Length: 154
Image (tube, rainbow, N blue to C red):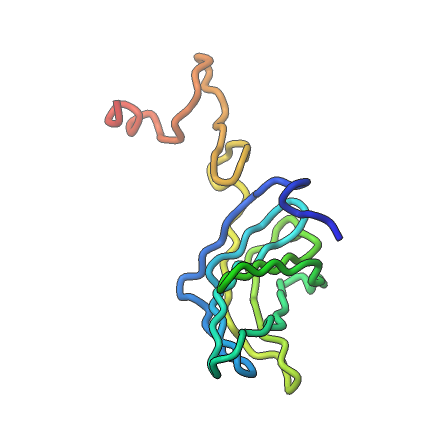
């Protein structure tokens, strides 16, 4: 088992437009966020029991349009929060992820998430959403705005 957090770096955090809430065999869970690390994917869940007992670990599966096989590597639970670590990380060019509940009678949809391009403005991705934009001919850093907008912004 690889410790994704200590050996990797965080590339993106995906927040669902609507929280993926699902009920499965006495456990209700909500997908709060999905973290994309260079070493794997972390699905952040909130667990709740529907029958008064301790909530069980939901079986979830991650799918992308490439058909990548993501395998569950680790589960960490603290109170009502659970982190499920999947490997590998997403392949370059992935534009969406779908999380399904892997129920015995067939997988059911939980939530779909858009994966933004690594860099939408031509800069270099450093950490997460922090970008370093290319230098202008005068040697200063561009703010990403055109010449007219730069004047208005100053």
